[in-house]
View 1: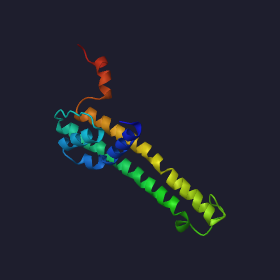
View 2: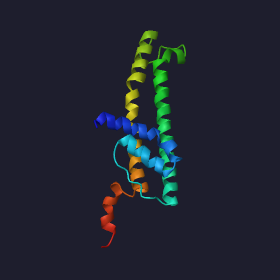
View 3: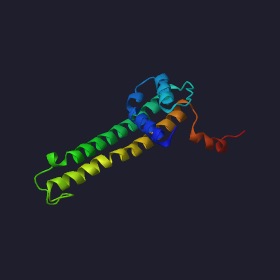
View 4: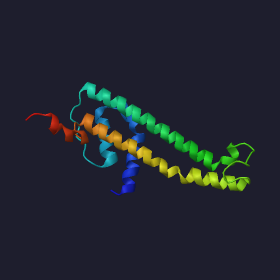
Length: 151
């Protein structure tokens, strides 16, 4: 899987976090397997673990949808700046002409839109690690378990 595909899949998973929060644990594991194309063992989480995962997935899902909202607002305001802004183009970026303001705002709104995938991908990676740790009891935090257990 290429780096671009991993970023897109992680961003997609972040957006799916909100509906996943209210699904059964089997659906959560299946969605994680399908999105990332890797194995995900579900080890019969307790009701407490399921509730904690639901809460954390809902928080991550709300944050992701807020980031999507901000990205869409920036895209629309950038692409349609002269239609949404006031009549004063003297102090706008690219002004004082209408064409200059439109070009600068459209370039920024459309050009920066793909960068919004990076915070979404970061939220998706956090969601995947939380799912691995809480639902399948594996993940990066188990590396430190050897220091706390006595054999």
